[in-house]
Image 1: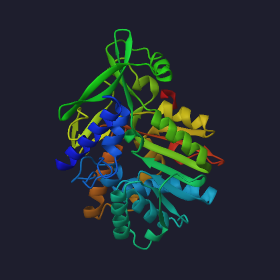
Image 2 (image 1 turned 180 degrees about the vertical axis):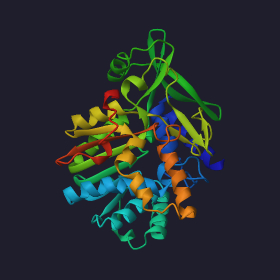
Image 3 (image 1 turned 45 degrees about the horizontal axis):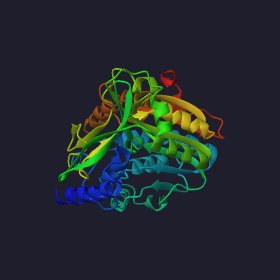
Length: 372
């Protein structure tokens, strides 16, 4: 609570300096990434059973072992390295490295782009415990390289990028920002005067009242990645929709949600710095930004199809069902990764390439590009 109050005090100062109001994207940036205070910059446990939410790599090593097959294809064709953006606890990196070693497909470097010193320490500890002989291949980056060749992977990254929140009341669009209320924070609306943003939201065929999110940070990140990928493949895995489904008239309260101790909340001002804040991904926006950046669209599908295409059943088959103590937990984990009522349909994967000939195996079947 003291930690959260320190962050709220910092946000109050920023609001005061800005004249009493800041956009929600600025608030979300402070709440998640303010050095030493933000959710991803502080020291609380975020991932796994003791944290606030569970990601696919924390659910099962099958996730990383399966994605390693896709990575191995790209590495074999490019002779490049592997770059993971937003690597969480380092669990995914450990599982991919171990699988690549078994495939005799290790890259020279496995780069982790992570700005949080606290998370870097956790990643280093995870790698040292899980794959001590391979930990030397890992290199932490402070920023995206000017150029990169190989396989770029981001799992559950885009949903945590700051979003602008807008709402329509009758015929008028407003931007939903944040102001101070005593010791707390509250939603504060202003008429939307940002011309590019106003032009964009006016194209949405939605009836009032309507509230939703726009994520220019997603476009900026994808565009930057497109410019730095010299040769190889780029893959994002996250929860979200294509544009028409994202901005469906019935989705009139948006997708913004928070996670605290495995509970989903709808109040982004509850315990700032101690809860995660996310918004679903508009994958059409991702695709457009990548193609504008010169990348070739490689495919769009759900997580279940991605993992099946990459051979999760073969990876699971490497453990004999006769060894029930090992096989049965993995089979249950596979169900969580693949099940339509678990992660299989909610999570999507989208991929892009530059300068490689072979299609990405992850998108061989289950094409959903019609939904973009």
